[in-house]
Length: 102
Image: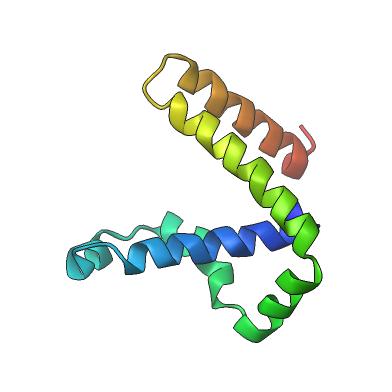
């Protein structure tokens, strides 16, 4: 549950915080696409409720965050390599199996 429910909330908040700290707010706002809105939707949830959920599940959430950090670092490392497409295709195929039963 930490990986599939709680961590996405943490990631959404981190992405919003990153946008908040970006230098040109007006330009940033004009460039925001639907993907930003979609991936940060859960950051609109009740902060008090989610703070309590995070605290109640802290060890599991920290473990999920560490696993994510490791995978995120792997992806960043291959952004300029030919293996990037393979990495993305693997993610796409797994997500398709999860939600489409394919």
